[in-house]
Image 1 (cartoon, helix red, strand yellow):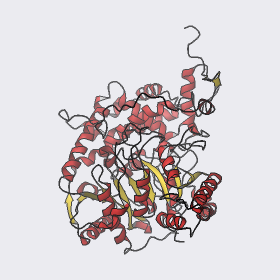
Image 2 (cartoon, each protein chain N blue to C red; image 1 turned 90 degrees about the vertical axis):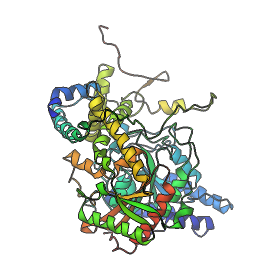
Image 3 (cartoon, chains in turn purple, orange; image 1 turned 30 degrees about the vertical axis):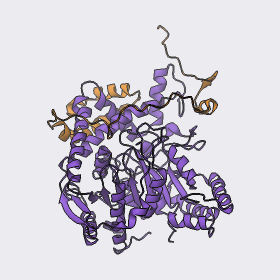
Image 4 (tube, rainbow over the protein chains, first blue to last red; image 1 turned 45 degrees about the horizontal axis):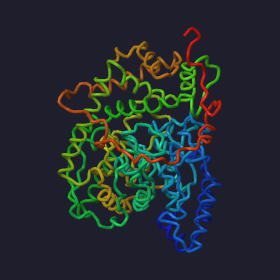
Length: 484
Length: 100
Protein backbone atom coordinates (compact mmCIF):
# COMPACT_ATOMS: atom_id res chain seq x y z
CA UNK A 1 0.00 0.00 0.00
CA UNK A 2 1.39 3.37 -1.02
CA UNK A 3 1.90 5.74 1.91
CA UNK A 4 1.51 9.49 1.79
CA UNK A 5 4.76 11.42 1.97
CA UNK A 6 5.61 13.42 5.09
CA UNK A 7 5.01 16.65 3.17
CA UNK A 8 1.55 15.43 2.12
CA UNK A 9 0.68 14.25 5.65
CA UNK A 10 1.68 17.57 7.21
CA UNK A 11 -0.20 19.53 4.54
CA UNK A 12 -3.45 17.63 5.10
CA UNK A 13 -3.22 17.98 8.88
CA UNK A 14 -2.47 21.71 8.63
CA UNK A 15 -5.41 22.06 6.21
CA UNK A 16 -7.71 20.15 8.56
CA UNK A 17 -8.48 17.37 6.07
CA UNK A 18 -6.83 14.73 8.25
CA UNK A 19 -6.00 14.41 11.94
CA UNK A 20 -2.65 13.55 13.48
CA UNK A 21 -4.42 10.89 15.53
CA UNK A 22 -5.79 9.12 12.41
CA UNK A 23 -2.38 9.21 10.76
CA UNK A 24 -0.73 7.86 13.91
CA UNK A 25 -3.22 5.01 14.31
CA UNK A 26 -2.68 3.96 10.66
CA UNK A 27 1.05 3.70 11.26
CA UNK A 28 0.65 1.95 14.64
CA UNK A 29 -1.63 -0.51 12.82
CA UNK A 30 1.06 -1.34 10.27
CA UNK A 31 3.61 -1.77 13.05
CA UNK A 32 1.25 -4.14 14.89
CA UNK A 33 0.84 -6.26 11.76
CA UNK A 34 4.48 -6.58 10.70
CA UNK A 35 7.04 -5.47 13.25
CA UNK A 36 6.91 -8.83 15.01
CA UNK A 37 8.57 -10.17 11.87
CA UNK A 38 10.91 -7.26 11.05
CA UNK A 39 11.91 -5.98 14.52
CA UNK A 40 12.56 -2.42 13.36
CA UNK A 41 11.65 -1.07 16.80
CA UNK A 42 13.19 -1.65 20.21
CA UNK A 43 10.18 0.15 21.68
CA UNK A 44 7.00 1.60 20.17
CA UNK A 45 5.93 4.62 22.24
CA UNK A 46 2.26 4.46 21.30
CA UNK A 47 0.82 6.12 24.41
CA UNK A 48 3.16 9.12 24.35
CA UNK A 49 2.63 9.38 20.58
CA UNK A 50 -1.15 9.54 21.05
CA UNK A 51 -0.74 12.39 23.52
CA UNK A 52 1.57 14.23 21.08
CA UNK A 53 -0.80 13.65 18.15
CA UNK A 54 -3.80 14.89 20.14
CA UNK A 55 -1.82 18.02 21.05
CA UNK A 56 -1.13 18.68 17.36
CA UNK A 57 -4.83 18.19 16.53
CA UNK A 58 -5.88 20.53 19.35
CA UNK A 59 -3.53 23.22 18.04
CA UNK A 60 -4.78 22.81 14.47
CA UNK A 61 -8.34 22.94 15.82
CA UNK A 62 -7.61 26.30 17.45
CA UNK A 63 -6.38 27.66 14.13
CA UNK A 64 -2.71 27.55 15.14
CA UNK A 65 -0.02 26.16 12.79
CA UNK A 66 1.46 23.04 14.44
CA UNK A 67 4.58 23.30 12.28
CA UNK A 68 6.18 21.96 9.09
CA UNK A 69 6.01 18.35 10.30
CA UNK A 70 2.52 18.65 11.79
CA UNK A 71 1.40 15.20 12.89
CA UNK A 72 4.08 13.31 10.95
CA UNK A 73 5.18 10.13 12.77
CA UNK A 74 8.97 9.93 13.15
CA UNK A 75 11.01 6.93 14.29
CA UNK A 76 14.18 7.61 16.28
CA UNK A 77 17.32 5.50 16.31
CA UNK A 78 17.70 4.20 19.84
CA UNK A 79 20.97 6.08 20.41
CA UNK A 80 19.14 9.43 20.53
CA UNK A 81 18.25 10.46 24.07
CA UNK A 82 14.56 10.76 24.90
CA UNK A 83 13.76 12.01 28.40
CA UNK A 84 12.09 9.34 30.51
CA UNK A 85 11.94 6.89 27.58
CA UNK A 86 14.45 3.98 27.54
CA UNK A 87 17.46 4.67 25.31
CA UNK A 88 19.51 1.50 24.96
CA UNK A 89 21.91 1.78 22.00
CA UNK A 90 20.77 -1.86 21.60
CA UNK A 91 23.25 -2.73 24.35
CA UNK A 92 22.77 -4.71 27.55
CA UNK A 93 24.94 -2.16 29.30
CA UNK A 94 22.21 0.51 28.86
CA UNK A 95 19.12 -1.73 29.04
CA UNK A 96 16.44 0.08 31.03
CA UNK A 97 18.30 3.40 31.18
CA UNK A 98 16.03 6.44 30.89
CA UNK A 99 17.86 9.64 29.93
CA UNK A 100 17.26 12.73 32.08
CA UNK A 101 17.13 14.94 28.97
CA UNK A 102 16.05 15.06 25.31
CA UNK A 103 18.50 15.28 22.41
CA UNK A 104 18.35 18.65 20.64
CA UNK A 105 16.97 16.96 17.49
CA UNK A 106 14.14 15.47 19.57
CA UNK A 107 13.23 18.92 20.88
CA UNK A 108 13.32 20.34 17.34
CA UNK A 109 11.05 17.57 16.04
CA UNK A 110 8.51 18.30 18.78
CA UNK A 111 8.66 22.04 18.03
CA UNK A 112 7.95 21.26 14.35
CA UNK A 113 4.83 19.25 15.25
CA UNK A 114 6.31 15.79 14.58
CA UNK A 115 5.10 12.78 16.58
CA UNK A 116 7.78 10.38 17.87
CA UNK A 117 6.42 6.88 17.30
CA UNK A 118 9.24 4.78 18.77
CA UNK A 119 12.90 3.92 19.16
CA UNK A 120 14.52 1.83 16.44
CA UNK A 121 16.98 -1.05 16.58
CA UNK A 122 20.66 -0.59 15.70
CA UNK A 123 23.97 -2.37 15.79
CA UNK A 124 25.11 -2.03 19.43
CA UNK A 125 26.44 1.51 19.91
CA UNK A 126 26.09 1.98 16.11
CA UNK A 127 28.99 -0.40 15.46
CA UNK A 128 28.10 -2.53 12.48
CA UNK A 129 26.69 -2.64 8.97
CA UNK A 130 23.83 -5.14 9.31
CA UNK A 131 21.96 -4.50 12.61
CA UNK A 132 22.92 -8.06 13.56
CA UNK A 133 25.07 -6.71 16.42
CA UNK A 134 22.00 -5.69 18.45
CA UNK A 135 21.76 -7.24 21.92
CA UNK A 136 18.01 -7.53 21.29
CA UNK A 137 18.17 -9.48 18.02
CA UNK A 138 18.52 -8.43 14.37
CA UNK A 139 16.22 -6.29 12.23
CA UNK A 140 15.11 -7.82 8.92
CA UNK A 141 14.92 -6.19 5.49
CA UNK A 142 11.29 -5.42 4.51
CA UNK A 143 12.11 -6.27 0.87
CA UNK A 144 13.32 -9.77 1.85
CA UNK A 145 13.17 -10.75 5.53
CA UNK A 146 15.90 -13.37 5.07
CA UNK A 147 18.31 -10.48 4.41
CA UNK A 148 19.80 -7.72 6.56
CA UNK A 149 18.55 -4.14 6.37
CA UNK A 150 22.11 -2.82 6.58
CA UNK A 151 23.35 -0.88 9.56
CA UNK A 152 23.95 0.50 11.92
CA UNK A 153 20.65 2.45 11.58
CA UNK A 154 18.90 -0.67 10.18
CA UNK A 155 15.79 -0.24 12.32
CA UNK A 156 15.20 3.33 11.09
CA UNK A 157 15.74 2.32 7.45
CA UNK A 158 13.42 -0.69 7.76
CA UNK A 159 10.78 1.41 9.55
CA UNK A 160 10.57 3.88 6.64
CA UNK A 161 10.77 1.11 3.99
CA UNK A 162 7.94 -0.84 5.68
CA UNK A 163 5.68 2.22 6.01
CA UNK A 164 5.89 2.22 9.83
CA UNK A 165 6.79 5.94 9.75
CA UNK A 166 7.20 8.41 6.86
CA UNK A 167 10.40 9.73 8.47
CA UNK A 168 13.16 8.50 10.74
CA UNK A 169 16.41 9.76 12.20
CA UNK A 170 19.65 7.84 12.29
CA UNK A 171 23.30 8.55 12.92
CA UNK A 172 26.12 8.13 10.39
CA UNK A 173 29.72 7.57 11.49
CA UNK A 174 31.02 5.65 8.45
CA UNK A 175 27.84 5.12 6.43
CA UNK A 176 25.32 4.07 9.08
CA UNK A 177 22.50 6.10 7.50
CA UNK A 178 23.37 5.82 3.80
CA UNK A 179 24.22 2.09 3.68
CA UNK A 180 20.94 0.87 5.28
CA UNK A 181 19.00 3.44 3.22
CA UNK A 182 20.50 1.91 0.06
CA UNK A 183 19.80 -1.68 1.17
CA UNK A 184 16.18 -0.85 2.15
CA UNK A 185 15.36 1.33 -0.89
CA UNK A 186 14.85 4.66 0.93
CA UNK A 187 16.59 8.05 0.97
CA UNK A 188 19.28 8.59 3.63
CA UNK A 189 21.37 11.69 4.30
CA UNK A 190 24.60 12.34 6.19
CA UNK A 191 24.77 16.13 6.61
CA UNK A 192 27.93 18.26 6.81
CA UNK A 193 29.70 17.68 10.13
CA UNK A 194 28.43 20.31 12.58
CA UNK A 195 25.22 21.14 10.69
CA UNK A 196 23.05 19.10 13.09
CA UNK A 197 23.60 19.25 16.85
CA UNK A 198 24.98 16.05 18.39
CA UNK A 199 23.69 16.98 21.86
CA UNK A 200 21.92 13.88 23.11
CA UNK A 201 23.36 11.56 20.45
CA UNK A 202 25.21 8.87 22.38
CA UNK A 203 28.78 9.18 21.15
CA UNK A 204 30.55 6.52 19.08
CA UNK A 205 33.34 8.42 17.24
CA UNK A 206 32.89 12.10 17.97
CA UNK A 207 34.86 13.55 15.04
CA UNK A 208 32.79 11.46 12.57
CA UNK A 209 29.27 11.09 14.05
CA UNK A 210 26.44 13.09 12.51
CA UNK A 211 22.65 12.75 12.84
CA UNK A 212 20.61 12.71 9.64
CA UNK A 213 17.26 11.89 7.99
CA UNK A 214 15.67 8.81 6.46
CA UNK A 215 12.67 9.39 4.19
CA UNK A 216 10.76 7.85 1.33
CA UNK A 217 11.48 10.86 -0.90
CA UNK A 218 14.23 13.43 -1.44
CA UNK A 219 11.79 16.26 -0.63
CA UNK A 220 10.80 14.68 2.69
CA UNK A 221 14.46 14.24 3.60
CA UNK A 222 15.12 17.90 2.76
CA UNK A 223 12.24 19.10 4.96
CA UNK A 224 13.37 16.93 7.87
CA UNK A 225 16.96 18.15 7.56
CA UNK A 226 15.75 21.77 7.56
CA UNK A 227 13.92 21.06 10.84
CA UNK A 228 16.87 19.48 12.67
CA UNK A 229 19.73 21.64 11.28
CA UNK A 230 21.04 24.83 12.85
CA UNK A 231 23.31 26.08 15.60
CA UNK A 232 23.03 24.66 19.12
CA UNK A 233 25.03 26.14 22.00
CA UNK A 234 24.89 22.73 23.74
CA UNK A 235 27.20 21.18 21.08
CA UNK A 236 30.56 22.95 20.87
CA UNK A 237 31.14 21.46 17.38
CA UNK A 238 27.84 22.85 16.09
CA UNK A 239 28.40 25.28 13.21
CA UNK A 240 27.46 28.84 14.13
CA UNK A 241 25.05 29.42 11.25
CA UNK A 242 21.38 29.01 10.52
CA UNK A 243 20.05 25.88 8.81
CA UNK A 244 20.05 25.53 5.02
CA UNK A 245 17.20 26.26 2.61
CA UNK A 246 16.81 22.97 0.74
CA UNK A 247 13.25 22.02 -0.19
CA UNK A 248 12.54 25.24 -2.10
CA UNK A 249 15.64 24.66 -4.28
CA UNK A 250 14.77 21.11 -5.35
CA UNK A 251 13.09 22.01 -8.62
CA UNK A 252 16.02 24.01 -9.97
CA UNK A 253 17.47 21.08 -11.89
CA UNK A 254 21.09 20.34 -12.78
CA UNK A 255 21.65 22.24 -16.05
CA UNK A 256 25.35 23.05 -16.22
CA UNK A 257 26.13 21.25 -12.95
CA UNK A 258 29.48 19.45 -13.03
CA UNK A 259 29.27 15.85 -11.78
CA UNK A 260 32.29 13.60 -11.15
CA UNK A 261 31.91 9.82 -11.32
CA UNK A 262 34.48 8.52 -8.82
CA UNK A 263 36.88 6.10 -10.54
CA UNK A 264 38.05 4.45 -7.30
CA UNK A 265 34.48 3.63 -6.18
CA UNK A 266 33.04 2.21 -9.41
CA UNK A 267 35.45 -0.60 -10.30
CA UNK A 268 36.90 -3.51 -8.36
CA UNK A 269 34.79 -4.89 -5.52
CA UNK A 270 31.50 -3.38 -6.76
CA UNK A 271 28.78 -5.82 -7.91
CA UNK A 272 28.20 -5.47 -11.68
CA UNK A 273 24.49 -4.61 -11.29
CA UNK A 274 25.32 -1.92 -8.73
CA UNK A 275 28.02 -0.42 -10.98
CA UNK A 276 25.58 -0.52 -13.92
CA UNK A 277 22.93 1.38 -11.95
CA UNK A 278 25.52 3.99 -10.99
CA UNK A 279 26.43 4.54 -14.66
CA UNK A 280 22.69 4.82 -15.44
CA UNK A 281 22.35 7.50 -12.76
CA UNK A 282 25.26 9.37 -14.34
CA UNK A 283 23.52 9.15 -17.72
CA UNK A 284 20.30 10.46 -16.17
CA UNK A 285 22.10 13.48 -14.75
CA UNK A 286 23.72 14.08 -18.14
CA UNK A 287 20.34 13.86 -19.87
CA UNK A 288 19.06 16.51 -17.44
CA UNK A 289 21.82 18.90 -18.49
CA UNK A 290 24.67 18.10 -16.11
CA UNK A 291 28.22 17.72 -17.35
CA UNK A 292 29.45 14.30 -16.20
CA UNK A 293 33.07 13.13 -16.23
CA UNK A 294 35.17 10.55 -14.46
CA UNK A 295 37.19 11.90 -11.56
CA UNK A 296 39.97 10.11 -9.71
CA UNK A 297 40.21 10.62 -5.94
CA UNK A 298 43.21 8.31 -5.31
CA UNK A 299 43.50 8.42 -1.51
CA UNK A 300 39.93 7.16 -1.06
CA UNK A 301 41.36 3.65 -1.31
CA UNK A 302 43.02 4.21 2.08
CA UNK A 303 39.81 5.45 3.69
CA UNK A 304 38.70 2.08 5.02
CA UNK A 305 42.00 1.39 6.80
CA UNK A 306 42.16 4.89 8.25
CA UNK A 307 38.55 4.71 9.43
CA UNK A 308 38.97 1.37 11.17
CA UNK A 309 41.83 2.85 13.21
CA UNK A 310 40.32 6.30 13.91
CA UNK A 311 36.73 5.28 14.72
CA UNK A 312 37.68 2.49 17.18
CA UNK A 313 40.27 4.78 18.79
CA UNK A 314 37.61 7.43 19.47
CA UNK A 315 35.12 4.74 20.50
CA UNK A 316 37.50 3.19 23.02
CA UNK A 317 37.71 6.59 24.69
CA UNK A 318 33.98 7.43 24.45
CA UNK A 319 32.89 4.05 25.79
CA UNK A 320 35.12 4.31 28.86
CA UNK A 321 32.13 6.02 30.52
CA UNK A 322 30.22 2.71 30.74
CA UNK A 323 31.82 1.60 33.98
CA UNK A 324 28.86 0.69 36.18
CA UNK A 325 29.15 3.82 38.32
CA UNK A 326 26.60 6.41 37.22
CA UNK A 327 24.09 4.60 34.97
CA UNK A 328 23.40 1.31 33.27
CA UNK A 329 24.48 -2.18 34.20
CA UNK A 330 26.64 -3.03 37.22
CA UNK A 331 27.56 -6.62 37.99
CA UNK A 332 27.42 -7.65 41.65
CA UNK A 333 29.96 -9.46 43.78
CA UNK A 334 33.11 -7.53 42.86
CA UNK A 335 35.57 -7.04 45.72
CA UNK A 336 36.85 -3.71 44.49
CA UNK A 337 36.14 -1.13 41.84
CA UNK A 338 38.67 -2.45 39.31
CA UNK A 339 37.04 -5.88 39.38
CA UNK A 340 33.64 -4.21 39.05
CA UNK A 341 34.74 -2.28 35.95
CA UNK A 342 36.15 -5.32 34.16
CA UNK A 343 33.24 -7.61 35.00
CA UNK A 344 30.54 -5.03 34.22
CA UNK A 345 32.03 -4.16 30.83
CA UNK A 346 32.57 -7.85 29.98
CA UNK A 347 28.92 -8.64 30.79
CA UNK A 348 27.43 -5.50 29.23
CA UNK A 349 29.18 -5.17 25.86
CA UNK A 350 28.64 -7.50 22.90
CA UNK A 351 31.38 -9.02 20.70
CA UNK A 352 31.68 -6.24 18.08
CA UNK A 353 31.84 -3.48 20.69
CA UNK A 354 34.52 -5.40 22.59
CA UNK A 355 36.42 -5.92 19.33
CA UNK A 356 36.39 -2.19 18.53
CA UNK A 357 37.33 -1.17 22.07
CA UNK A 358 40.28 -3.56 21.85
CA UNK A 359 41.30 -2.30 18.40
CA UNK A 360 41.03 1.32 19.48
CA UNK A 361 42.86 0.82 22.74
CA UNK A 362 45.65 -0.96 20.84
CA UNK A 363 45.87 1.78 18.18
CA UNK A 364 46.23 4.41 20.92
CA UNK A 365 48.61 2.47 23.18
CA UNK A 366 52.24 3.32 23.77
CA UNK A 367 54.51 2.01 21.01
CA UNK A 368 51.76 1.71 18.39
CA UNK A 369 50.22 5.20 18.41
CA UNK A 370 52.48 6.65 15.69
CA UNK A 371 52.24 3.58 13.45
CA UNK A 372 48.45 3.35 13.55
CA UNK A 373 46.43 6.27 14.94
CA UNK A 374 48.98 8.92 13.94
CA UNK A 375 49.30 7.46 10.44
CA UNK A 376 45.53 7.24 10.05
CA UNK A 377 45.15 10.92 10.94
CA UNK A 378 47.65 11.81 8.20
CA UNK A 379 45.72 9.71 5.70
CA UNK A 380 42.69 11.75 6.72
CA UNK A 381 44.60 14.84 5.56
CA UNK A 382 45.29 13.17 2.18
CA UNK A 383 41.61 12.41 1.74
CA UNK A 384 40.64 16.00 2.59
CA UNK A 385 43.23 17.26 0.05
CA UNK A 386 42.11 14.87 -2.71
CA UNK A 387 38.46 15.82 -2.19
CA UNK A 388 39.44 19.51 -2.40
CA UNK A 389 41.22 18.86 -5.70
CA UNK A 390 38.18 17.00 -7.05
CA UNK A 391 35.78 19.75 -5.97
CA UNK A 392 37.95 22.29 -7.79
CA UNK A 393 36.87 20.45 -10.95
CA UNK A 394 33.29 19.33 -10.22
CA UNK A 395 30.34 20.38 -8.03
CA UNK A 396 29.23 16.95 -6.79
CA UNK A 397 30.64 13.43 -6.86
CA UNK A 398 28.69 10.29 -7.76
CA UNK A 399 29.33 6.68 -6.68
CA UNK A 400 27.45 3.61 -5.54
CA UNK A 401 26.38 3.82 -1.88
CA UNK A 402 27.31 0.19 -1.19
CA UNK A 403 29.29 -2.44 -3.10
CA UNK A 404 26.40 -4.96 -3.02
CA UNK A 405 22.66 -5.29 -2.48
CA UNK A 406 21.34 -6.58 0.89
CA UNK A 407 23.03 -9.83 1.94
CA UNK A 408 21.54 -12.76 3.91
CA UNK A 409 21.55 -12.68 7.71
CA UNK A 410 24.65 -14.40 9.03
CA UNK A 411 26.60 -14.10 5.76
CA UNK A 412 29.31 -11.80 7.13
CA UNK A 413 29.16 -12.13 10.91
CA UNK A 414 32.07 -14.56 11.20
CA UNK A 415 34.52 -12.32 9.32
CA UNK A 416 34.57 -8.73 10.67
CA UNK A 417 36.74 -7.47 7.82
CA UNK A 418 34.22 -8.62 5.16
CA UNK A 419 31.54 -6.71 7.09
CA UNK A 420 33.74 -3.59 7.28
CA UNK A 421 34.14 -3.61 3.46
CA UNK A 422 30.44 -2.61 3.20
CA UNK A 423 31.47 0.90 4.16
CA UNK A 424 34.15 1.52 1.55
CA UNK A 425 32.08 4.04 -0.46
CA UNK A 426 30.57 5.91 2.48
CA UNK A 427 33.54 6.32 4.85
CA UNK A 428 35.43 9.07 2.94
CA UNK A 429 32.67 11.67 3.47
CA UNK A 430 32.78 11.09 7.24
CA UNK A 431 36.56 11.43 7.35
CA UNK A 432 36.30 14.76 5.49
CA UNK A 433 33.17 15.98 7.32
CA UNK A 434 31.31 16.38 4.00
CA UNK A 435 27.61 15.79 3.23
CA UNK A 436 26.40 12.81 1.21
CA UNK A 437 23.03 11.33 0.27
CA UNK A 438 21.91 7.89 -0.84
CA UNK A 439 19.04 7.82 -3.34
CA UNK A 440 17.24 4.59 -4.34
CA UNK A 441 17.96 3.81 -7.98
CA UNK A 442 16.33 0.66 -9.28
CA UNK A 443 17.24 -2.88 -8.35
CA UNK A 444 20.23 -5.19 -8.57
CA UNK A 445 20.76 -8.90 -8.02
CA UNK A 446 17.62 -10.68 -6.79
CA UNK A 447 15.43 -7.64 -7.47
CA UNK A 448 16.80 -5.96 -4.34
CA UNK A 449 17.16 -2.17 -3.99
CA UNK A 450 20.29 -0.33 -5.15
CA UNK A 451 21.29 3.09 -3.84
CA UNK A 452 23.53 5.64 -5.53
CA UNK A 453 25.46 8.19 -3.53
CA UNK A 454 25.93 11.89 -4.25
CA UNK A 455 28.68 13.66 -2.29
CA UNK A 456 29.35 17.39 -1.99
CA UNK A 457 31.89 19.63 -0.27
CA UNK A 458 31.14 20.99 3.23
CA UNK A 459 27.80 22.84 3.32
CA UNK A 460 27.05 21.81 -0.28
CA UNK A 461 23.69 20.31 0.73
CA UNK A 462 21.52 22.52 -1.50
CA UNK A 463 23.39 21.50 -4.68
CA UNK A 464 23.54 17.87 -3.55
CA UNK A 465 19.76 17.74 -2.97
CA UNK A 466 19.07 19.28 -6.41
CA UNK A 467 21.10 16.51 -8.06
CA UNK A 468 19.39 13.92 -5.81
CA UNK A 469 15.96 15.12 -6.96
CA UNK A 470 16.97 14.59 -10.60
CA UNK A 471 18.27 11.07 -9.85
CA UNK A 472 15.06 10.28 -7.95
CA UNK A 473 12.90 11.43 -10.87
CA UNK A 474 14.92 9.30 -13.30
CA UNK A 475 14.55 6.25 -11.01
CA UNK A 476 10.77 6.35 -11.56
CA UNK A 477 11.38 5.18 -15.12
CA UNK A 478 13.43 2.15 -14.05
CA UNK A 479 11.93 -1.25 -13.26
CA UNK A 480 10.11 -0.84 -9.92
CA UNK A 481 11.30 -2.47 -6.71
CA UNK A 482 8.92 -5.18 -5.62
CA UNK A 483 8.13 -5.44 -1.93
CA UNK A 484 7.54 -9.05 -1.03
CA UNK B 1 52.59 -7.00 12.04
CA UNK B 2 50.54 -9.92 13.30
CA UNK B 3 53.61 -11.25 15.14
CA UNK B 4 53.33 -8.13 17.30
CA UNK B 5 49.81 -9.13 18.16
CA UNK B 6 50.50 -12.02 20.54
CA UNK B 7 47.83 -13.18 23.00
CA UNK B 8 49.95 -11.49 25.69
CA UNK B 9 49.65 -8.10 23.95
CA UNK B 10 45.90 -8.59 23.49
CA UNK B 11 45.54 -9.51 27.17
CA UNK B 12 47.44 -6.36 28.14
CA UNK B 13 45.20 -4.22 25.90
CA UNK B 14 42.10 -5.81 27.45
CA UNK B 15 43.44 -4.92 30.89
CA UNK B 16 44.03 -1.31 29.76
CA UNK B 17 40.43 -1.22 28.46
CA UNK B 18 39.06 -2.68 31.75
CA UNK B 19 37.51 -5.56 29.83
CA UNK B 20 37.61 -9.05 31.36
CA UNK B 21 38.05 -11.53 28.50
CA UNK B 22 37.61 -15.30 28.58
CA UNK B 23 40.38 -17.48 27.10
CA UNK B 24 38.15 -18.14 24.09
CA UNK B 25 37.57 -14.41 23.51
CA UNK B 26 41.29 -13.76 23.86
CA UNK B 27 42.08 -16.32 21.15
CA UNK B 28 39.28 -15.04 18.87
CA UNK B 29 40.24 -11.37 19.17
CA UNK B 30 43.95 -12.06 18.69
CA UNK B 31 43.19 -13.50 15.25
CA UNK B 32 40.52 -10.98 14.26
CA UNK B 33 42.49 -7.91 15.33
CA UNK B 34 45.51 -9.22 13.41
CA UNK B 35 43.35 -9.48 10.26
CA UNK B 36 42.15 -5.87 10.59
CA UNK B 37 45.67 -4.61 11.26
CA UNK B 38 46.96 -6.53 8.25
CA UNK B 39 44.41 -4.68 6.12
CA UNK B 40 45.75 -1.45 7.65
CA UNK B 41 49.25 -2.35 6.41
CA UNK B 42 48.50 -0.23 3.30
CA UNK B 43 48.34 2.81 5.56
CA UNK B 44 51.29 1.74 7.69
CA UNK B 45 53.45 1.44 4.54
CA UNK B 46 52.83 5.01 3.33
CA UNK B 47 55.55 7.62 3.79
CA UNK B 48 53.60 10.51 5.28
CA UNK B 49 56.41 12.27 7.12
CA UNK B 50 55.57 15.61 5.45
CA UNK B 51 51.80 15.36 5.95
CA UNK B 52 50.20 17.00 8.98
CA UNK B 53 47.55 14.99 10.88
CA UNK B 54 43.83 15.80 10.77
CA UNK B 55 42.13 15.05 14.07
CA UNK B 56 38.83 16.71 13.22
CA UNK B 57 36.95 17.88 10.11
CA UNK B 58 36.47 21.40 11.49
CA UNK B 59 39.23 23.84 12.36
CA UNK B 60 38.02 24.07 15.92
CA UNK B 61 38.85 26.86 18.30
CA UNK B 62 37.67 26.99 21.87
CA UNK B 63 33.98 27.77 22.12
CA UNK B 64 33.19 29.94 25.11
CA UNK B 65 29.84 30.89 26.60
CA UNK B 66 28.83 33.71 28.89
CA UNK B 67 29.54 32.86 32.53
CA UNK B 68 25.90 32.85 33.51
CA UNK B 69 24.18 30.23 35.67
CA UNK B 70 21.53 28.22 33.87
CA UNK B 71 19.42 25.17 34.73
CA UNK B 72 21.22 21.83 34.83
CA UNK B 73 20.02 18.23 34.95
CA UNK B 74 17.70 17.33 37.82
CA UNK B 75 19.78 15.61 40.53
CA UNK B 76 17.12 13.14 41.62
CA UNK B 77 16.31 12.20 38.02
CA UNK B 78 20.01 11.48 37.37
CA UNK B 79 20.56 9.54 40.61
CA UNK B 80 17.40 7.48 40.00
CA UNK B 81 19.26 5.81 37.11
CA UNK B 82 22.42 4.98 39.10
CA UNK B 83 23.15 1.36 40.06
CA UNK B 84 23.81 2.34 43.69
CA UNK B 85 23.29 5.60 45.57
CA UNK B 86 23.97 6.72 49.13
CA UNK B 87 23.25 10.16 50.57
CA UNK B 88 22.68 11.63 47.08
CA UNK B 89 26.02 10.30 45.87
CA UNK B 90 27.09 7.50 43.52
CA UNK B 91 28.14 4.55 45.66
CA UNK B 92 30.95 2.32 44.34
CA UNK B 93 32.75 -0.80 45.59
CA UNK B 94 35.98 -0.42 47.58
CA UNK B 95 38.63 1.64 45.78
CA UNK B 96 41.69 0.99 48.02
CA UNK B 97 42.92 -2.53 48.68
CA UNK B 98 43.08 -3.77 52.32
CA UNK B 99 46.82 -3.30 52.63
CA UNK B 100 46.92 0.14 51.04
